[in-house]
Length: 281
Image (cartoon, rainbow, N blue to C red; front, top):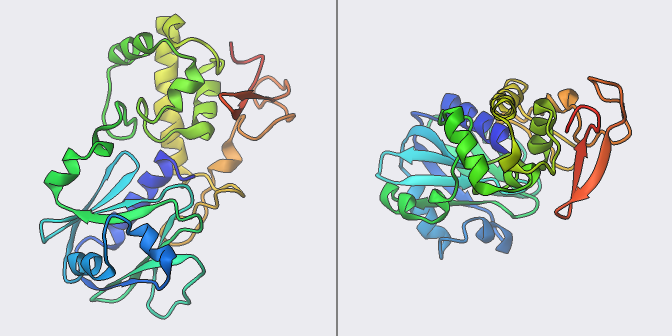
């Protein structure tokens, strides 16, 4: 699943590639699957009419939603879900399987939404209606967007009184970490996955906060994480490289890069969790 670093990479790519372009046409591919991607719109034509002729004025991000702000007082919202990718192509490029939406631009080129699991979506709404949606208001921390004083972060951790892995993976607390980045952040901060959040020292909190921001920034610099079960690619179809820098995630039985102990995998909240028993306490 693309998480916060991958979504931010796509946002930056879109900012370079489609801002200032006018939408010439929109194709919703035939079949029921494509309609699932535009499920908030009743008909293909309704969706197409809201986009056709509009100019992309800016690209924004709210959590894991990518926002294409248009000059017709509308916003196109893209949620990549578990398996979605955006690809910038020429009109002559072969349409790959699981392509559901094709957006063409007046000066050439296309933006295609590819989603094998049909877990993502795109919809068009007004800025006012967008801000009123429950999903829009659903999280507290976006580490790549809004700076947060570590004292405030400490108070939020203490208030929740939950195991650290459960808290970091909670989209309503920190957006876009998932299991992968939660495990990597906890390793970098030296904290076990089951450590209670209200028992951290001020030093623990500072280290966690630094690890949180640095891990995500490093992942963005490496152009995201592309694993066999996710296959994330950027707008140009290029895979990320952060998987080569992973310290614990999916490295069960391998040596810790810091202390040479074996990385352990345990089940926690029904999911695999990876950690170093020596470096994390």
